[in-house]
Length: 128
Image (spheres, rainbow, N blue to C red):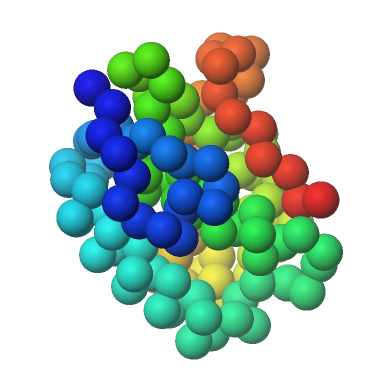
């Protein structure tokens, strides 16, 4: 079932309830939070990976939260939409990050998300 999200960083994006395992396989909120903390440290240390396009930093942050802290609605996953993930990855992430470690490669993780046509309940996220 749904769990209360204890991670304040993701609460600001509306992820009040989460479900485990996450879309990318974390089995506990603690594991997801630890990975998120590490990932945010890496991204903030190397913010040159995020293109200076309006809305990009927030969109990337939403996707990082959505992948690690899968939103839960009525006891079920509400994943982010793959199309949105692909747009944000292409628009906002520099090639140096795409070619970096897999755990930082957002485009790699888009493949775990459903297309909106296949799951109309998925959550679209834009860059504006």
